[in-house]
Length: 554
Image 1 (cartoon, rainbow, N blue to C red):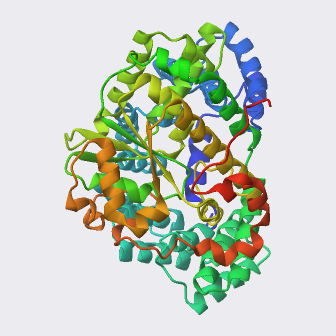
Image 2 (image 1 turned 90 degrees about the horizontal axis):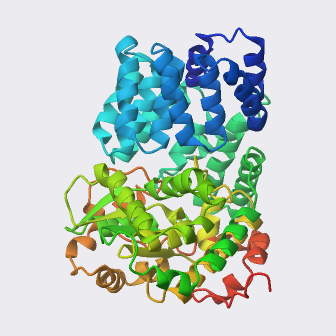
Image 3 (image 1 turned 30 degrees about the vertical axis):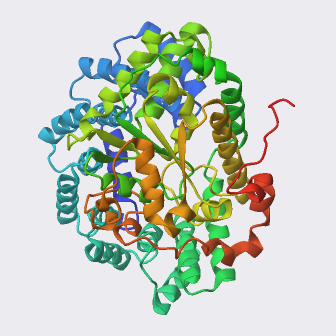
């Protein structure tokens, strides 16, 4: 028990509290466990046709729907399940998590509070509640819950790490360091605790700490997951020590381990770009210029991760008329809703179905986005930021439903941006980040997509180049504010004084004055970046310009 993830143990116990006794449901559960969602869906559909009021079958079908990406269907199935059996704790927990994933945190909190009434110290429920509270900006409440969890389970390194993250988000660096070190003291080979120290960016490892990590890697019983984190940590430690060959070797090993656990199709993004280039022609967009919701409130900050978007967000959030929020899931969830609920009615998929929607439908979708993000706007300011980098996938949707929203594309040198991704271990997203060739392909696809929108929507997207912003902050900030339509404010130059809480991996860096230190870090690793350069091709040669992309299918 001492070396098992306490959350995994709690999750297993929650599921075991209600054993599956019927053979047909056990088989469906086995298929679900193997992620054979089509198999479990077929088996459960047959079973529910004969037993529509079986709560256990409804829970399994909800989990299957979730696995198939049908979150709204999953939520409806969980609601039916709980109507039949309100005390089904595992189903209620799953329901709360699904509501959270659907960006309905107030409803998720209601479900979690109901669970806590019967079990006030439930580890899983307290943890999920802390996550939800942080997501809605209640960082102090989230920190209080994590502190309670540490008090209830002082010997859990997993909880110590979560507590450290919460402290980091509040800007309490030294306390976060102490929490991560305590986790390592409890479990010396706990890779995630070591990586959490590295992820502080400004933390520097001592020689004795490097030796301790190497010792853990020499132990055969250390798990693959821990090894992945430990290699990422050594990559950072050796890089800070200017031992770049050793640093890259460890980053490469870490990424290789991580990539083995990821199901990623490198062609997906390429196909999406081709669809968008075909669909979002100048004629298509101009014919719907008067459609959509006219509100100018959102400022979308998009681009590849590790390009400087957190810095731009922090600068804008320091302006007295702009509310800084977070990486909001609302646009991607709206795209999922369109794909799951609207596209099938037309026999199409997203984004192709957007061509079938009329002005009223587009206006309603824009209003829906504004409504779902409203609870995050706590200051009552005129504008708000949405710093989800991957909203570059949905620029066409944004244009159609929110034609007056601002779109800021933050771009960084391809090798600098991509290597920064390669040196990171992301908990979510960035599935392309763990092979240099896939990284380069994804970056090139992103540049191609944005070049298309630059052509069909001239001057619609404002571009910030990270290197220029760092070199001459005031000039670039003035240009950015001119694009938004706002006067310059000195507070934007003092962005590092803004004490707002944030969950970004760059949170520590933007709490310091602007610096050019990281611009050329990638040059230290250039001898090993051949596969990345090959995949980037002309995109690398043309930067900061863009190459002429041939017509798709040519």
